[in-house]
Every structure is written in C-alpha cells, then in structure tokens.
Amino acid sequence: MLVPRIVTAQLLERFIFNFRMRPDKLNERLPATWLQPQVFNGWSVASFCVLVLDEVTLWPIPAVVNVRTVSCAYRCGAVDLSSSQPVPTVYITDRNTDRPLIATVAPFVLKDTIPLVKADVAHSEGVTEVSVSHTDGQRLFSALVRAAPNPGELESEVFDSLEAFVAFIKGGVSSWTPSVQQGMLARVDLAKEDVGYEARTAEVDFSALESLWRDAELTLDSVVRASGGRYRWTYRGLAKADREVRSDAPPDPGYATADLFPS
Image 1 (cartoon, one colour):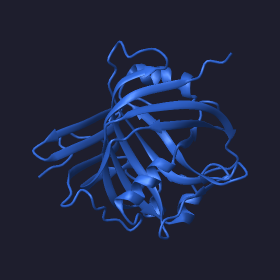
Image 2 (cartoon, helix red, strand yellow):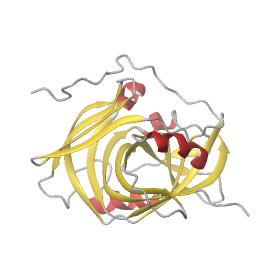
Image 3 (cartoon, one colour):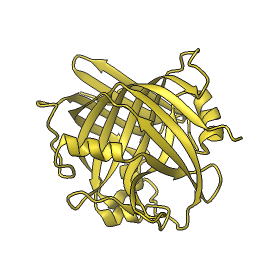
Image 4 (cartoon, one colour):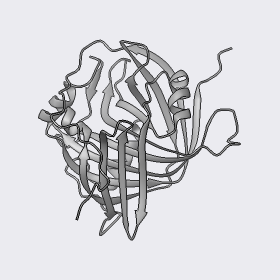
C-alpha cells in the first residue's frame, strides 16, 4: 500500500500580487500542449504568491515541532486539457521556501524543485514590506503593501469583483510545476480553507518574472490578502512536459540592498 505524500500547514496570511498579460504571451511559456491559458476579460494572469505558514508537517505526523516558513511562487492561471473535460489548473514556475529543512525534504515528497530563498514579511504602521531574494542576493520580489480604501472591492481589469477573484483562486485546485525528474511536470493538489480575502494596494519595487518574461509586458493588476485556514498539499503524480518554453535572460538580475525602498 502506497503512503500518500501529503504536506499540511496552518495559513497565517497570504499575499497575492496579480499581473495581467496577453493570453498568447502566457501560452508561449506553458510547458505542455495540454495546458492553455485561462482568460478573463481578454486577459490572462500570473500571480506572485507569498504565504506565511505555521505548523508545517508531513501527514499524518502531528505538528509537534512548530515549523514556520515564508514560502512563495509565481502561479499562472491555466486550463488542463489532458482529460475528457477541460478543468481549471495552475502552472507554477517554481516553489520557494526560506527553511533549509523544507527545501531539502519537500522535493522527495512533492517531486518538485523547491529552492531556498531569503524571505521576509514585515508589518509596521499600516504598511507590509514583502522582500524575497535568492541565497546569492539576487532579488526575486519586493513590494510595499497597504490597506485599500475599500477592502471588499477589487479594482481590476482581469476580475469583475473580489468574489470573481476568490472563485478563480479556489478553482485552481491542481497545479503543475517542473519536476526534479527531468522533462516531467509534477502535479500537486491543494485543498485550502481560507477564512477571508481583502483587497490591498501595493507598490512593486522588483519582480523577477518581469525580467524573465520581458516581452510579455506584465502589468500589476490587483493585490489581495488572504488569512486563516488549513492548507493541504497532496502529490498526484507526473506528466510529460511536451514542449519547450520561452524564457528571456534578465538584463538586470537585481541584487538585494540594505534599503529596498529608499525615500
């Protein structure tokens, strides 16, 4: 009997930075012919997600040791055409974690490359500073987040409302990401119980995907904060990545400095 490969955690908070882009530009970056871009109001969306997680553990092991992490990933809304009925899914370029233990163990559990990063989510006087960089100092993402005038209303060209965005997030149960096994994609299903979603405003100082996908003209569309609930990731197997994807070398990799947001 095979033991399920499951990771569970308690979500403390999650920030989702949505970047809109043309569907044809996203399609060039999807690594399988059976993955197609999701389209909303003529746009596709690539989101940078930052999750602050507590009580991370392998199921069914109880969270005896309190493992806390800041994890992050770029997620792209897609449609999975591999079965008889198209279903919403997510293409994840890479998952990242700030905990060496998770970066070491998780690839064996989820068959996913999970690089180690330096990450921080700092709150002060109504402002949240999100900063993520690779261990060599190369920046991955940095932004300042503030409360929106009306947290229940989402100003977006992609999503008609905050409720439409929530439906999009909850609809992406399955995800595909490059596997540790060359030429393959790993499928991981996420079951989550988010308690609340609120719109936010943000100033994005740096986003690595904008450099890697320069001609995609990624534009910040909206920002949402989620809080509370249990998260459960389940490994579901591998599928072949049957086409090469386009990726541009960044002209400026961007290295972290002591002051990410100089006045």
